[in-house]
Amino acid sequence: MSALTEPLPTLDRDRRAERSGWRIFLRKPSTRIFIPVLVFFIVLSVVGPYFVGDPITAGYPKLLPPGGEFLLGTDQLGRDFLARLVNGGRVSLLVGFSVALLCMTIGLIVGGLAGFYGGLMDTVMVKVAEFFQVLPGIVLALVVVALFGANVFYIVAILAITMWPGVARIVRAEAMRVAQLGYVESARAAGFRGLRILASDVIPNVTPPVLVATTMTVGRAILIESGLSYLGIGDPSSPSWGALLNSAQSYMRDGWWLAVLPGACIVLVVLAVNMLGDALNDAYNPTVGRVK
Amino acid sequence: MKARFIYYGRLVLSSFILFIAVVTVLFFLLELAPGDPIQALVGDAPISDALRERLVVAYGLDRPIIERYLTYLGNVLTGNLGYSVVTNNEPVLDIILSRAGNTLAIAIPSFLISTTGGIVLGAIAARTRKRWLDSGLSGLAVTLFSIPNFWLGMLLILFFSLTLGWFPTQGKGPFGGSGVDPRYAVLPIITMATTELAYKARIMRSAMIESLGQDFIDTARSKGLTSSQTLWRHALPNALLPMVTISGYSLGFVLAGSVLVERVFGWPGMGLLFIESVDRQNNMVVMGIVIVLTITIIVVNILTDVVYGLVDPRLRARFSPKRSAEVKKEALV
Image (tube, rainbow over all chains, first blue to last red; front, side, top):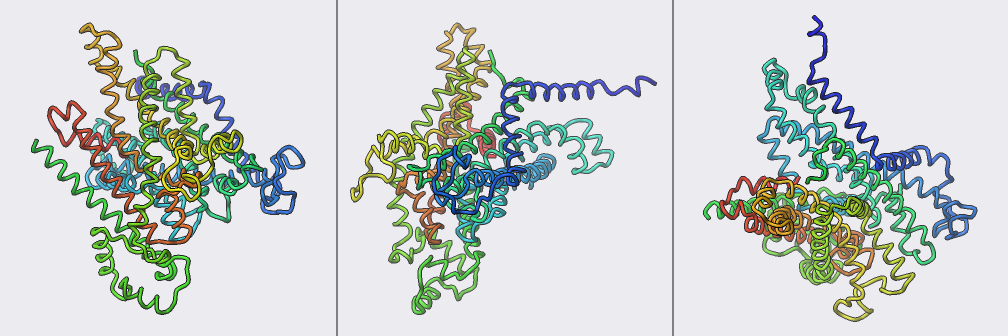
């Protein structure tokens, strides 16, 4: 009786391993530094815009250096730069996280099905990856914007379309492995279908590596978006950090803060995301450490 | 030998299909673009009725879409990328080729710097027993990797050009002069090389660690080789294999990144031409550049595959298309 009600020993060990993975992750020094950094920027871009001034009103003195009446000075048109920076962060982070979430969703579904069934899905995945390798996302985004006009939604969509194979690859490999396992075979024999098995057996196994890949995608999407906006083809109605850098270049001699601060914000967020991704990876793959 | 020929034959064929796919996507994007197609063709310039009439006939806009698509494809395949109406009907291919040299003038040095630097730093980080050196180098790599490289360029201008006055800020040489002035090229090359170097160092470090953990390293040591012989003769060549693939396949992203670097430094290469054409909606040139870029990347990919087949001892001894394809799949997705 008691033997039946106790949880299975292997399951128990897995759970403990998972918990300790999290604990290792949370205990790393880089985690302790960069989680607060990331949380700071997320909070700033969610609630910040309600607390800072108006980013659009011009008419204050132009190119006022940081520290005086305006904490971060004013820009070349005399607009409150702190307000512009905070609002710009909202756009940059929104693009980064939306792209990553889209990539994760597409990657889980397509990668899972490709790994499970192989065949056509698998071929399609590889072909799509090949296609975007010869036509890099930033180039495609430039073409689309040139033809259709600048718009945040286009940019998010294009980045997601070009970047999803990264996540899909991981899910695919795991799905291929899991499909061979005995209990999945018995689940199949019991009549469960692909998507159901995907949800119950594949997705829990791939959560850590997919989280790592998704985290890294946030950083890459922010970088690419900032590049596009720097080139002046971002959405003009909602300037991101990259767009601030675009207008800053002509004023570098008299307004260094216009060029330095938005870039520093991008670096901090992307660095935080990459460091957390690395730490998460290390925590879940202790073998990928130093050898000999 | 036969297996090798069949494999490369297939590779060339599938690359060709890939190229057709890219051209097709471009053509239909151009078709779907809102607005007047003639205006889009000419770009941001006024059109007279006579010109419009002539263009409609010249581009066959009165004919069905499938026919136009096939004509476009045929033109592209015979090296005709169209004409830039805004700039005196110059052939698009000529405009692009006149700028390509400038891009190569910064892309090739930065490729060499990033590859050698990445290999050296990655190998040091993997090999050193000093923990601080490894974590320092790895931390540096992640940081460089997280910097938007156009912003790095702006910082370099701010510091080395505006503050110290060592290097010029814009252009490829003094006004009116032809050719490339090395002093103008220093900062763009550094900017372009840095991100790539960080990326390659990361790859090299993990490849080297993996290589050092293999059984053949133990075998080499037990044969009595010294640790430096093991490192240079056994671990390093194996760790270099992924570098070949990565260097080749990352070329596309390097060339795409040149758009940003050239914009920062006003460097008149293909990237700057691309942006200028996007700004002026000179779509024929935009399409032409993407096509030239695609061809370059595809050719380099094929070369990468060939080189890989020559340097990987396993493929050299007994060529296996399956293994070759696996390597490619890993590097790609």
